[in-house]
Amino acid sequence: MGDDATLIDKLLHRLSTTFKIRDLGTPIFFLGIETLNQDGSLMLSQRRYMTDLLNRAGMTDCKPLATPASVTQSVTPSTQPYENPTQYRRLVGALQYLTITRPDLSFAVNRLCQFMHSPTDDHWVLLKRVLRYIKGTLNYGLRLSPSVSTSVHAFSDSDWAGCPVDRKNTSGYAVFLGSNLISWLSRKQRTVARSSTEAEYKALADVSAEFTWIVSLLRELGLHSGDPATLWCDNLGATYLCANPVFHARTKHVEIDFHFVRDKVASGEFIVNFVSTKDQLADILTKPLPGPRFAAHRDKLNVVSHPCA
Image 1 (spheres, rainbow, N blue to C red):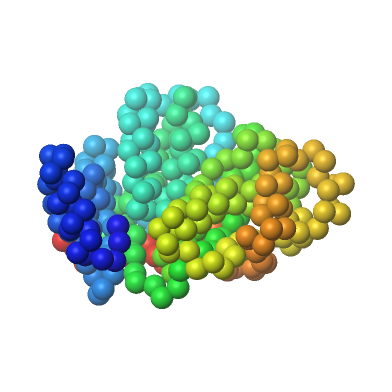
Image 2 (cartoon, rainbow, N blue to C red):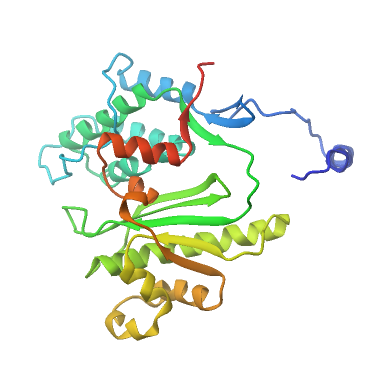
């Protein structure tokens, strides 16, 4: 990649003298992902993939829903196994690939993946809800727009004891380069946290590792602005813990690798700031949200509708 078309053409020509290659030009459809130009922006869409997924599940005529996860229905242990666990695993595995362009599905799909070993009828109901949400958002994709800023910032969040099965927390983060979402994650933490501050601190450590890799890549490409990356967290205790060693006495039980974020803050590479819960975009990656709030966060993650092909 680069901004010099002549140099790129020269490189491709030299490669073609040694290797058998073919320049396919501007990407249109690649690995199930369609690229669409819309008002100067690039849309990444998996509409065909989603349509095929609904066909495989026999839900092409299902009734759409506004959110992929219910705020009232929790995942509880069930003793009634689903009659076709292979079908469940195939569909959930296919949904994992869909999250490449649909970060709004990350939390719901992550939750479904936790029951791949022994799905029950309740888990199948949760899977069908995700598919019904997909039915209503077939024309949605991830938008990438020109941005004058090359600053890196991220929103980090975690629920506390959100899983009713093992009381572990779910971490989530969304990393932006300028105005564009470039990396996101929704994942259950390995250990149970003794407080919400500890859960949020662990989530900050996860996004710090991702930040380090992204900044290194941007420097290699010559795109890094040199400004410290900014982390936004909605827990004051966690933000203080990143900068104040006095809190160490309260976190002796926290694993050493989670203190990685404190070293980054001390060196000036990261800045951890507080953001109110209502503005915390990573909420969509850690818990079910009501319809209006879910839609607002989805729009801010640049998951928007595009014209039908």
